[in-house]
Amino acid sequence: MGRTLRASVIALAFCLGGTAWADPPANFDARVEEIRSQVGVPGMAVTIVENGRVTLAHGYGVRRLNTNERVDADTIFQLGSVGKAFTSAALAVLVDRGQISWDDRVIDHIPYFQMYDPWVTREMTVRDLLVHRSGLGLGAGDLMFVPRSSRSREDTVRALRHIRPATSFRSGYAYDNVLYAVAGQLVEEVSGKTWERFMREDVLVPAGMRTATSDRVERRRTRNRAWPHGRRDGPMAGMGTQEMMDDSGRAEFDPELGANAAPAGGVAASANDLGRWIAIQLAHGATPEGGRLFSEAQSREMWRPQVHVPFGQAPEPVAASTPQFNSYALGWMERDYQGHRLIMHTGAVFGAQSILILIPERNVGFSIAINSEDGEAALGLAYELLDHYLGRPYYDWGAAWQSFVQQRDQRAVATLQQQQASPVPSQPSLPLQRYAGRYQDAWYGPMTITGTADGKLMMDFTLTAGMTGELTHWQYDTFRVDFRDRLIEPAYVTFALNAEGAVDRISLRPVSPLADFSFDYQDLNFTPVAAE
Image (cartoon, rainbow, N blue to C red; front, side, top):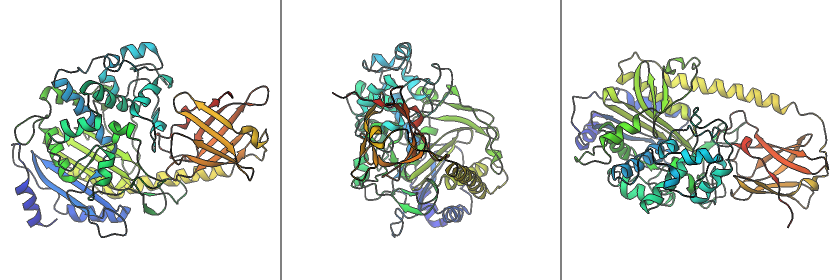
């Protein structure tokens, strides 16, 4: 960005007071374009706020591949789990109004809420919904909305009672999305507004975020939006040729999370929007005009760490990113970088990724959003900005994160190739038609396997459009399913037989070593539905 445009951005930016601020790195625009080009990211939006002033809000690249539709400061990007802090803020608004408290029991606001364990049902609080210590396993329940679902948010809440815990309540950390869906339903039960409407009327509009949206229909209707992109023609998801995904709502392969999960990752916002959001966060809830979105007390509460997040030593060449402490608060992560406290979150949905970092001691915050799944680009720029604002020596974090991803992918491809070369020559125990039938998992719901006219088997997850595919024999009583929707990870499907030689249950696991944890196939336990 040239100095003339930079000066106009600063002149138009709002001020919350504070000391003088430093410009972003002198070569930053060129650096963004360099990393964007190296990685192959179609479009990117970057926002930097220093001492209450927006010193950069700019778009780079294009909204859609093979077009001239440039990204600008008002182009909205999907934020994924960076949006969890917005749901936390919605609850903070209700706390400030005296309608809830963080330590209210969930069942006092949602009487039909149930966890698998009745004791946990009685003890689960609003705070517990947000901090990933419920005892559920990593990503438990995500298949109720990944990549999409016809299930309502209330139906999702009602299905929770069937998900078995992986650990005891409040004993440790395991990231989940499903309890943020519960938090969204709680907003509706308390306020009388859907989460989407409450977010618009009581969070986004009061924050002055004029283009941001929490409604997927509204996002799709927004002309100035970044379209999702991904790589699906390589050895596994995330590898191959960059291509645009159709999120118009008309395509079968629509990269759209189920609306039931929107409180976990359904906010979309522009660089200009995020400038206001970051400034409000750094001002502990105060708006640029002197009002308040939420109180300073709630700001402290949302940033207060609640549970330790385990971590290990990051490998070279990104070893310096290893924190000394790592915790989860209410929709935020608290960790350090080289001894400096950060409040941050990352986000990822199909075709988009984002990162937002606050450095409270420097009164600086920034966000980076991309319209592809190449997170190494956003991470490289984020760490270069951290070094700049913390006065650290320059390090080529762009190259470091690209190298890290390349090495990880190479290892995964080698594992996959070894796996694919090792099936045991064998035949299924039963004639194929005896595997067909109607099956049910307690929390996911129905699934069918049917025979085709040419003697094959088709699997259909009936609540998830496009999650259908042909079963091909792998080994013994295990088959492989490649779903028609390329967004959905292929899986191994194993049939367990009872003493009479009939199918007793079906289990699944992903084929890819890099499959996202949201494809929580390992939690499924399908059993036959008795004929009526």
